[in-house]
Amino acid sequence: MAALTARTMLRTMRAGGMPVDAVARILKVERKDIYACIDKGRIPTAARSRLLTIFTIANEELAGEFRSMYRVWRRPMTADGRSLLDLLTADVLDEGAIRSACRDKDLKRSVERYAAMDRNPVVIRMEGYGNPVLDDLPIADLGPQS
Image (cartoon, rainbow, N blue to C red):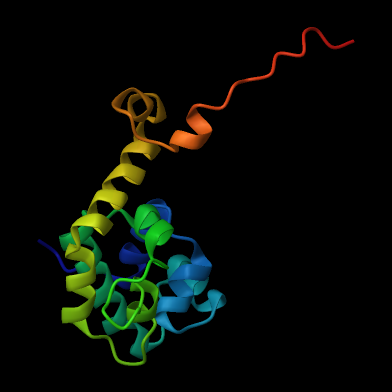
């Protein structure tokens, strides 16, 4: 397999639903740097190794579900209350702690549920996922509006 370029990794993350602002935050660069890399392939050197580490972990541990990862990354994951976001934005990436957080069964289940909802919201409803409070609210039919 050919080595992935920073441009390819960023395009994959964006196509997978990760907002540019979120990518810039975890890579510790500005949004303009992300756009420059997507357009021209230029990214600060310090961000390259960080990008490769985060991209690899997300693909190996969370099946590359970037949008779903973004949706749950504020959830406390460590004994001291740090979230996946805290781990990803630390000055020095702790690959072991990030992998451990990504392997958490509750986080994985949430990521899988959100990914399935993105693929087919009707199936999720039939399987009993979703928000039980909102799913059971009655719908008000106010009749024809003139």
